[in-house]
Length: 270
Image (cartoon, rainbow, N blue to C red):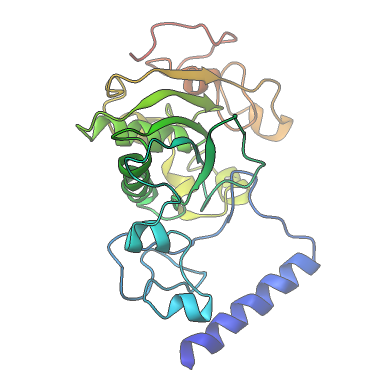
């Protein structure tokens, strides 16, 4: 009874914020410090968990499960292992709990929203763990995948590649506006405004670049595209061209931070 009353208060508060015109972070579903079920199955969601979500069997009845409850605690990704399935996995970005745009489609393929929570301090390792569950089920055996990601999803995919020996059946990975090289905005007051979650402060260039071996892509091909002409209130903090959140050195997988107006700047990670 106690937890359902608190949950109701959060719903009421969310309704008030919507009435006042508050929006979710553009980086993906969520935008707050959502709980995760990584290392928390059977109890209260781990992390900052300002959304008051749970990872026990009762959460499905009460409707207060953390967004990654099904894949993390039940192994339910929406894919069928070794079934000859064809899948397109969508990995969201910073402060997200999933993919918030229309998912791409391809004849004969099923689009899957990867519920990888990227909101807390441990957002990179937690979401990488969750992504691994999807890859192991959706992209092995007779199954085949494409992976599409953006923003912080770039680092999540890179972290999973560098920390796994599994040979997944991935045609290629497509990264848009990737933050695999970090962003100069992280740790800045703008990160708190436009990325209202704890993870926004942990996407700095040094922290992300030292978080995993960027040259280890598990033998998979990763394509990068970057946005151009960012916002005046953030671009002045980013070197060279940018999309308002990440500079070309990050979006273009350049091995060092630099000011550049070209996505073709070298050297690049493998």
